[in-house]
Amino acid sequence: MAYFTEDASVETVNARVSESADPRLQTVMASLVRHLHAFVKDVELTQAEWDIAIDFLTKTGQICDENRQEFILLSDVLGVSMLVDAINNRRPTGATENTVLGPFHVDGVPEYELGANITQAGGRETCRFYGTVTDLDGNPVEGARIDVWSDSEDGFYDVQQPDIQPRNNNRGVFTTRPDGRYWFEGIKPVSYPIPDDGPVGKMLGKLGRHPYRPAHMHFIVSAEGFDPVTTHTFVAGDKYLTSDAVFGVKESLIAEFTPIENGETLWESNYDFVLHRAT
Image (cartoon, rainbow, N blue to C red; front, side, top):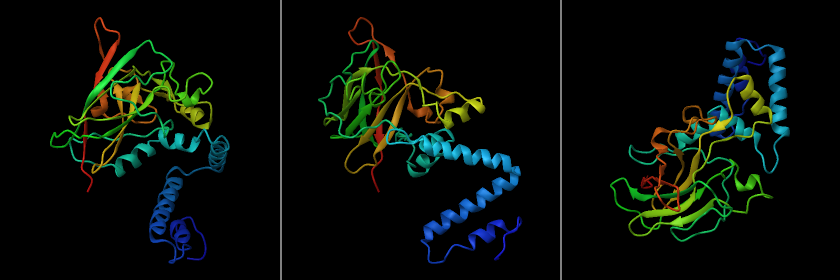
């Protein structure tokens, strides 16, 4: 089909792809063209609407820099990041579920002894995090590496406020003992808005959606012989649990944060991680 027509648009475009192209690329692009053309035909996209879309994508690219990736934000708020994560992290029932990594993970953070405090800038709502790391049969996992990070009580990560927060504030790495236990001190995290001053934020406003994420602590739990888990524990009762701007909440990841009576630490949160052996 050498010439483009409305009815044969998909076939015409896909016929131009060389058979020498990478097979996986052929599969992905053929499906993309098929679904994209179906969308345009379904809504009968107007020229004015397509111009708006092009302008939106252009501005999305223009706001990106080494510290901000607006396209990832767009993927997040459309649920694509969570869908890709779910497809690539299917696990048996009982294993801890994944959720999105988020944009604020940092490599090379301090490694602490169990029980250490990861909050360098102080914190009013102090919290003790603890639990176990086991396999699906309930056996403790010794030597599991637990990489944790959270926002401050003002709702910002240290990398967002390099002139205000100390480097690696509310970040740390811990290693489990033979009993699989972990514990450390931090703060009770708070809900916060994703960056909403760019095109993605304006899109959310047009859709009547808020930009907030429910309060959560980030975890990456890894151990030799097991699939690593990238996840959060979410503060039970947070008002944004059912409307997370990036769709990251899973019911199994909601954790209780319990007040501690008459203690220096005000809160505690217990969460047990269950790892699936790598195949």
